[in-house]
Length: 82
Image (tube, rainbow, N blue to C red; front, side, top):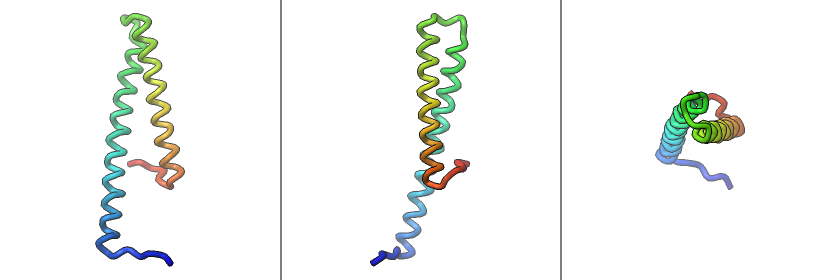
């Protein structure tokens, strides 16, 4: 037996989906900003090699996280995150 939602429950469900999308966009924006900073650090020849290497590792880690978010969105049917 399939449960049906009341109009209020349906509105709550849409609200949760909308707010989840906003939070996801914020997290993705933060990752992109951090990734850009790390990329710049990795390319800054004025920094010690150890710091540049750490920035490169962090940049790759961030890229992996963004890839996971993109794949999760594609699997759930949300291919556009705009």
